[in-house]
Length: 223
Image 1 (spheres, rainbow, N blue to C red):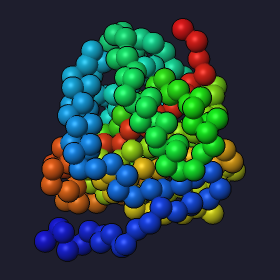
Image 2 (cartoon, rainbow, N blue to C red; image 1 turned 120 degrees about the horizontal axis):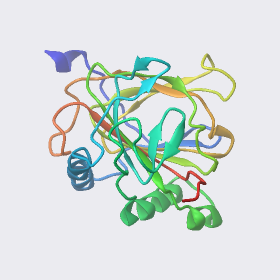
Image 3 (cartoon, rainbow, N blue to C red; image 1 turned 45 degrees about the horizontal axis):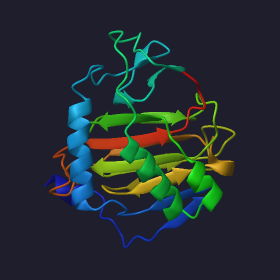
């Protein structure tokens, strides 16, 4: 019965949501999604385990494992001093290549694409009850684009403006395999996840329930 009340995806084409922010549906193949999902299960085992960060005294409903740098509100560290003191897993070379392909797919200039060298990824897991409030990705010193990949259940993603958490914003469905890139004038736009739609993950994507979201970034940090 649940499937009767989950959103049906319309025919979807790549589109610019706002200047600097582009959505590319079905960018990852099912085989690629499954491979990345298997890597997620490996990362989640540690040395820093999947955990829900505490922001302003409230525990997030989203659980995160980090690559390259460990994110904790509101800074990046090499060691997870807020969890167990272990160092974050290294940032994989294949993800750098994937990030550059993502910029190519969203029409970025060759110079931007060639110099894009993400050094951290926040890998978030959403169960069906998880939400993510409107926020800016501004803990990085670099303002290079953010590359976001979705695997598993479809979510309602809210992408707003750079001035406030309120309107104007756009609500769109991010499904398994979708790519979303935001940079330039949209780099500091507020964004969040208002709903995860249960039982929408495609068979063979590597995760049976919930949603994996990978956001890769350039921190601009040394060390």
